[in-house]
Image 1 (spheres, one colour):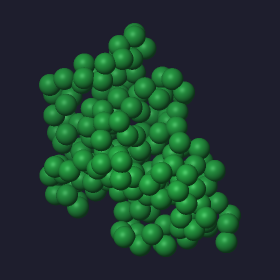
Image 2 (image 1 turned 180 degrees about the vertical axis):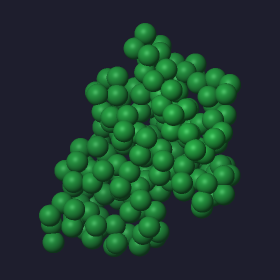
Image 3 (image 1 turned 90 degrees about the vertical axis):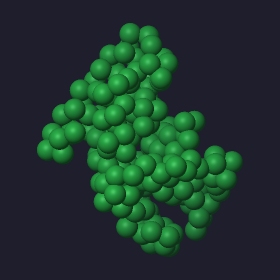
Image 4 (image 1 turned 30 degrees about the vertical axis):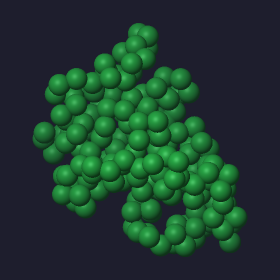
Length: 175
């Protein structure tokens, strides 16, 4: 992989996947093979994660490719700098995620999306869970926060959930 032009290779893979989906293929395991799978692994992205973004784009016209690229770039940076290019051997247990209606400082969905963001950064998302899903996008849009910006804030905050709460409240105009 060329670090200089990884984004061009990622775009090509994404565009091929969109074409594949639009032709009627809905089998995530058949979208990415061989070199594509190796490339995605080299940037800390799983085929399922990219399939989920492609599927949501084709079905709902969001998230936009630029948003997917920014999220992937954030994950890639975490993967290469924090994880030193080593994939995690852990997958989070969806049953241990906060419920969708759980609240943190009165904000529903926030506990759940924090844990999803942490799992996304570490590459520990189970196949049935998506960071940037149809629940995450409206939450972040309502808080005036980009998907990738939220990942970076969670990364910077570490275990300090209060820092994340302050950021969400500031961005959404709450005090």
